[in-house]
Every structure is written in structure tokens, then in C-alpha cells.
Amino acid sequence: MLTVTAQAKRELKNILDQRKLGAGRCLRLAIPPAWTGPGDFGIVIDDEKSDDITVTLRGTKILLLSQQLAPQMSTSVLDYKDTPQGMGFTLDVY
Image (cartoon, rainbow, N blue to C red; front, side, top):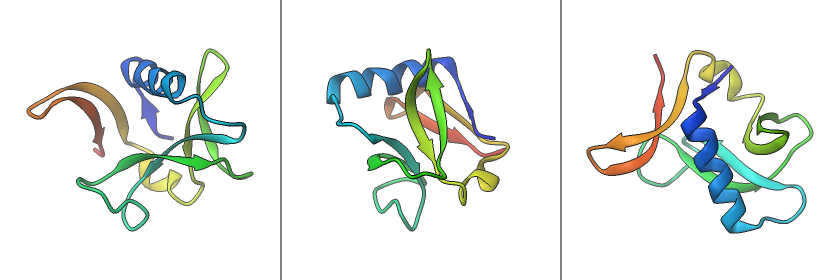
């Protein structure tokens, strides 16, 4: 299962609080080909699907992960930290 650091969870929750998404909508971790933006992954707003894996913070859903993507992310770590480009999400896949 994908590991999401405490710092990444806090930042995801901050984004959700600012966006005030409607019922059934959440942030989703996406990789190509679903993700077409810069970099190897992105976080997008999407509708929750019945078979999604959810990441929570204090009982609130903060991130969705598809069942198909989960095996590829089994040893990955999603973090929010200082990078050469500034503060941002990183996905370590080791």
C-alpha cells in the first residue's frame, strides 16, 4: 500500500479545505496515461469510485487511489517537502 507521510496528509487536507469539494469528490493520485501534466504523477480532483482505496486523516478522506494503481504503489512514499523547485509533493517509488 502507498505510504503517505504526515506532512503530505496535512497538505492534502489543506487543499481540500480550500477547495470545498462537493459530496463524492476528492483528490486522486494519478500517473500517466491518466496524468498528462508535467512530471511522473499528479494530484487531481475526481469522483470517488466504489473500488477506490482511500487515505484518511482524522476520519476525513483526503486521497483516492485506484485498485489498478495500488499494486504499482506498494513500496512508494508520497511526501510533501522542499525540493529544488520549492515545496511540493514527491513520489518516491523505491
